[in-house]
Length: 356
Image (cartoon, rainbow, N blue to C red; front, side, top):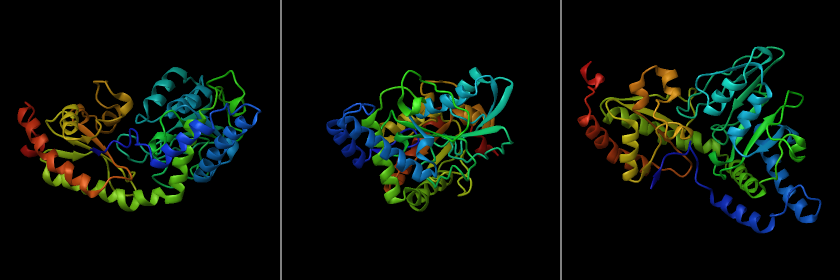
């Protein structure tokens, strides 16, 4: 199998599997309990917290563990219920939909802009906040892919997820700068200094810790920059060179996008069909955000970016990870041109670029 859907979720690292199996056997106790097994579990939680703050330049008390990045995003938006909330049209659905519900006209104002888009990998320009305003950024796609400094970015809030870096699904984290507004989304417990109720997912957090340790030990952002970027860029060039009617929705210049995501469109070929034909060949890709699976509407990200429904409906997201090789690119290009040609041959839509 050629797995090119890392932006949706990454396979568990071997180190993560080992850590979680150990935690299941040795760290099963409630991390809030006063007995020794509880203290051992809590130590694991706090070790993970320390690793994350080391990687993002924060303080341990500024990190809240959640069950997902979507929960973390909702927590921030809910904190500003009734206030003015400004987001970009390229945000994740957990931001866009919650902002529709909770935004109002009161002060203070919150800006929520992701640093890098999950469908195209392109960077967004973070807005400049004024005094009395606050800035949140969803850094889910960025962690492990490039260095992060929440202080230099001027962030008051930031969102992270374990399963994008080889950790388990079901664990996220929220950075909340000291002395900024905060309202718990989940109440009813003293965990996380009463900021997020619920028994700690110690096994999952242990997996998150192992993934963070792997990122730090191997400086994964350097591997993405030096190795993975080359794979992505090679695939981009070959698609443009070898497939008529192809175009890129990702600006692959280094300063414009993450090194691992490539979004491409293929005229007169429907994205879901491309995905299914590739899947039959053992090549796993996405038609956009995994959270929009089953939604027949065109990608809101590509519609906002291009305004062209045909482009959005004919798009495929290839997202690379640390285990991919140039052989994977070769396997994609061994079958993709013919798949696109077959689909274009069945389509009633003329390929515009060939008629220009």
